[in-house]
Image (cartoon, rainbow, N blue to C red; front, side, top):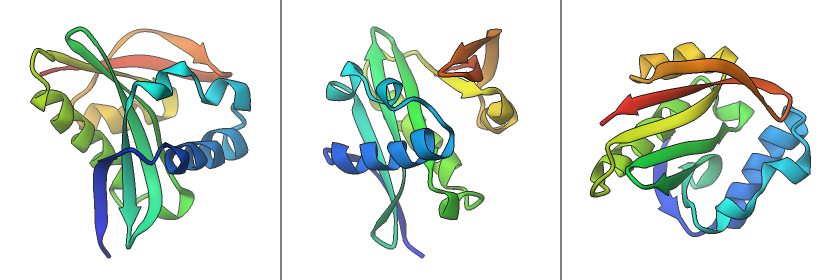
Length: 140
C-alpha cells in the first residue's frame, strides 16, 4: 500500500472528499462546507494506491497557520492517515518563515487524537455547523 500526502492544486478532488465526509456522512449543511477561504488556502491531498482518501487545508494569518477541513474516507480510517495529514500539515507550517503556532478546531470526540499529536485544548466548547468543537493549538 502506497500512501502519499502532498500539497495539491486539485481543489475539486478535495472538495469532493469533503462533501462526502462532512455533508453526506456528518450532516453539515452544504452551504457551510465550502467558503471563500478555499480559493487562497493550501490544500493537501492524501492518496492510497493513487486513490484520494483524505484532505486538509491550511490557512495562514500572520504567524499562525490554521489546519481545517481535515477528513479521511471511511475505508481509510484507522490506518494512521489522519495522523499523517496532521503531521504533514505541521511540517509545512514549520517550513513557512515566521510561523510560530498551528491551531485547529477539533470536533470534541477527536480531542484525544489531536492531544497525542502535540496539540493543547484552549477555551470553551463551541458549535460549528451543529457539531461541538474546541480550539486546539501547538507552538512551533
